[in-house]
Image (tube, rainbow, N blue to C red; front, side, top):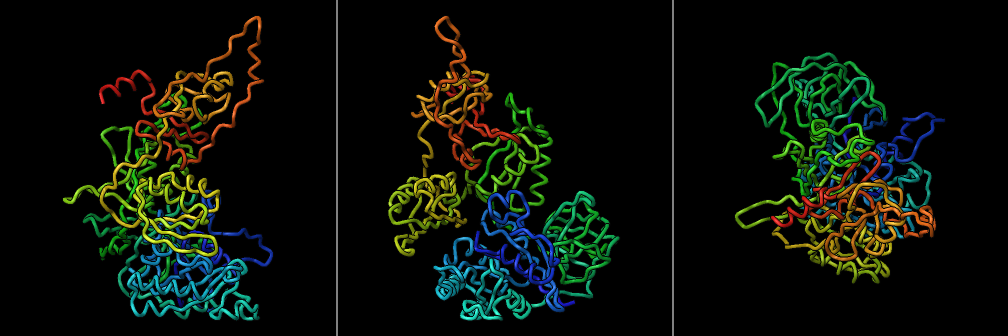
Length: 608
């Protein structure tokens, strides 16, 4: 069988998942009367809510006598570990670029990874039917980007297709696409382009078995399923195999239970798979990404997948709060550690380390989004734990301390550009480039310390009244930029346990902004609001109005309070100070002090 393995790479929201939808619809994967959702591959609940691709997914389509394996990769730089893994499975890539926005920071990120692997991408200029589209300008910008990334002569001679993924159309001729000609009412010309321009896999069909494990899935019936491309030989159902790794000398034997291949969206069981195809198999529960599947008598590990280093780190600790066990299924340090270690095996860009305390674990990731998605996933699975303030991963060298820097791109209305510049300046950002980005808009590029971008997105949207666009990606490790003041105000901290009353909150409201409303259960050391001044303020929010001859206790109903400030997970993380932590449970997010007892906190302040 003829095979093509291709990855779809793009910046967030440039239409790559919608393009895969069009491939699946028009290649005969679905029945004529089958109900199909949009963005079929974004099946994860978090992906649907956030509108981004987080996990890489595999599908295949049959085009004539050619089987095309398509992998949809994440577009956000925080999930670069997924991108790097997937590019090791393919021989070509479709680079999808928005016909209005052009190449964006994470377009650069994923393209750089593809060029480094020697892939020759096909450029797809998507959304050509938008009113403000400028496809020719975008092609020129893509060429300039290829040059800036030191592409080879062969890679610079890239084919270009113009598309409208939403309407399921593509053509190598822009005028034909825009003219609604008969031939441009289909996505199939792009599939033909994949067959024409993506090379066949260069593999050894007769050699000993070699297969790099690049992805893992889980099935309730068969357990863990390992995926990867077979580099040489044949993989059989029921076969005895040897699992090796290029970075360790030990090897272990295992047995394949069932081999699978992709047909459309479905995983179908087969007796064997040959070299060049993307295969999956079940039967080995403890298999890890980066391991090589070999024949028992031919241990030949493939080079391990290399990923970029983490840039942010935080401590996950056991939830020792009084309300910890109310709505959680998993609470203990053993359960927390097992879950984090299990995540690190699948999520290769994540690092998990033990600390001096058996109840605390240091988790390092590629950015704020990378870590927040892990936190949100775990709380939905029934875990309860606490996390500390995100900190940059530092490198200690002879030249001094180095910290990670991000390349930040913004697109804002001119009226807000000055205030945004001031906001970024407070976070130690340095302007690199600024130019006109269309009528009454400005585009600019900054270098900002990674810690300076924690919680920046919500401030940026507030400052630009929701009209600003921002994207950032890791740039390099550079000299320590100095102190960054994230928050100059203190916190309102609950004095004692109880249920918050409107009577007590009315007094607390005069001292700052509240995070809770009447009827909320609180405990000593819980943060209930933001103080309007610097320094923390201990306050009793559970105090009740005493009944007298003149007034009834129920007259709290007449008290009018402002609506409490609702914080997202990312805003909670940005709010944290050094002595705070965030309590995460399946139903609640609570800000609290690391040390709940106020007397113990005072003693620690005196000794520090």
